[in-house]
Length: 278
Image (cartoon, rainbow, N blue to C red):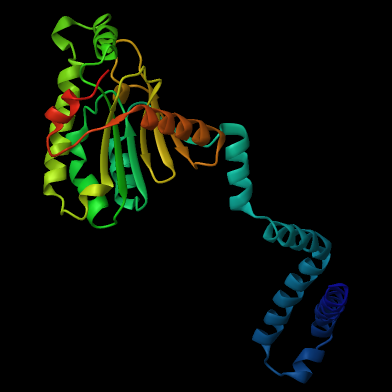
């Protein structure tokens, strides 16, 4: 590197000196003797000599910039950003004011390993059931759905939590919502080929859920169950990475509720749910 910079300095010095000599040579008429009528070459030499002189004066500064670029080229920018995201934000990459259906639909279209939803019931399930079907049939992804048992006492508590600060005309029936989801999932199960059906799994749980989760591969959309507001209408944290602080905690909660839950036979969800003891 030192030899290269020394050579560049020598070349720039020679060119700058040549440019300086051009001025008196032109005044004394020497250039006309060398190249009669060569006005254009003289102008060109003057311009080049001026630019070269400027570069020569700024050589050290350009060398500093070169060193900066060299150091930046050695940095793993993506790795640094990932480490900062994990350290300072726990994996949170964005905060949404409400459930981002378009974003989730896009993530569903990319998922090829696992899709998992933890909810009391899924009010917007009908909006992406076709995407779930494509994930299972085209990309052979595993789909797991966790819903609150429709007869669970928690369903009544959630009804009351939604009712306390809402107009009675806007009341939500959690039990009816769960049953509607199970009916949609039964239709989805029926539409799948026999060999694909095992990748669609549904469980119901009888426990107090702490969060609502929509997971696609290593992406999570997480919200809370607030009074008077559906989870999909609450603030959503978008988390990227199952190995992040938040990602690990959310995954642990999913695994815990999955262990608590009981399988639903989607060939006859009513009969299956009716046999599950609370």
